[in-house]
Image 1 (cartoon, one colour):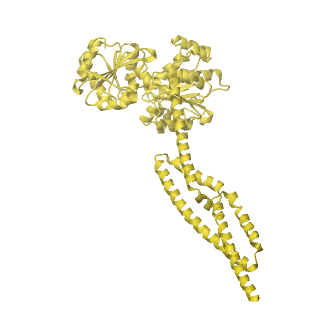
Image 2 (tube, helix red, strand yellow; image 1 turned 120 degrees about the vertical axis):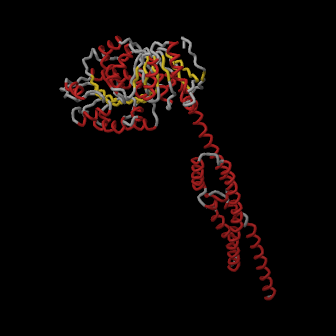
Image 3 (tube, one colour; image 1 turned 90 degrees about the horizontal axis):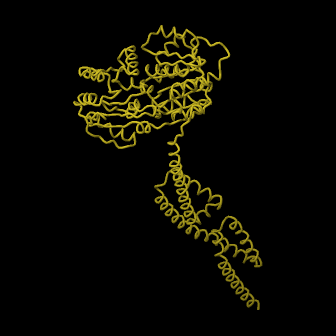
Length: 561
């Protein structure tokens, strides 16, 4: 019996061990399932394992040891299978990511960077473990693809919106409703002077800038000479001084406003306009420029208080260094033709002058330029605070009021064609532009031999003669003026019917400045440009600047040209 019982017990043990192994094998698939679950479900896994241990705790101690060994072996085998699965998944994930990277290679770098940075953060927040991240490669890759697609869609949308807004804004920028001077609440003496000059409506640069400048805002204005910007800043100055008279006695040589101009002609023109506008207001304007008698200018400064000082940089520095002009009480600083000052190398002098004026927070600054490239814009930003930027497109000046013609003329035939045109068409008043000073003198000499009266206006002409020549031209006593670009900047004469470009300028902006001498104040004008083998290469740049195709024709020498 004992032997039989012992065999029976051994048989029972064997059966129990087989049953335990079967139960353990049956419960094994549940373990890997929890590994692929999210974090909260994964944390429940120990509870399931504990339950199995409790169920199996009814076995005797030897069987417990056997089951523990079996249970310990199962977790070691399962992670191996999971690791294999994870490795395969990681390989699939990397391959899919590579495909996504190839498909999105055309996308901006910022998009790819944001996608790569955002995706791991989301996975870390959702999964919480590396094993879980590797267990769902396809979902993660799909999410990455979706994010890249969404980012691309988002980026395209603002661009489209920006394009639409630009197309909407363009007509508004081009549309200008004329503003009457009467609507600006100007002082009565100033309005009377404007009426006497025959002006009723503001030009675009005046109508857009005056509401801001009259409210003491800084203004940067982009407009050609001849668009009325001189009157825009002069009206601002005289209105400010009329409404805010000084409470203390003004010292000699201490102006309330400083206007800087690049050339003597332009400075003197500004002085003349200022005197015309302020003749009923009792305000005084003084001009100091190089090439003129220094002693007489000093005497003029000492005659009394100066409201507006118009100056060229070089001569002004002479007065400041001798302490005969004090700029510490300047209320308004006006910089005119800033791009021309930059071209002529005056900016270092202008910087020295600006440093002599009060800080930009304690003064108003009006900054005007025909063009605003990066260099000019940096100057404007350094000398102004939150300035209102006003733009009057040069294309409107070039095309709306000026009939532009381009004649094919050989370099050796230019003098002959010019003489024939002046003889047959006999324009009422014309300016002929040349690129160099020596060329202007040769043209004058040639035309005089043909009994056509004309004068040169160039930098090497003495200042007094230049002033006399310009005065005769304004009065109509001189019909034809031969000028360079620098000298031509100061020519503000109404009634110029023709501008002739004896040579195409090297700079497209100078072309617009040249033809801006005609077609002023709403009047029509004609420009004729000689195009020869020497300067035809300038045409593509000029076409791009004007935004229109240029058609060159044979000279039309009929009287109605």
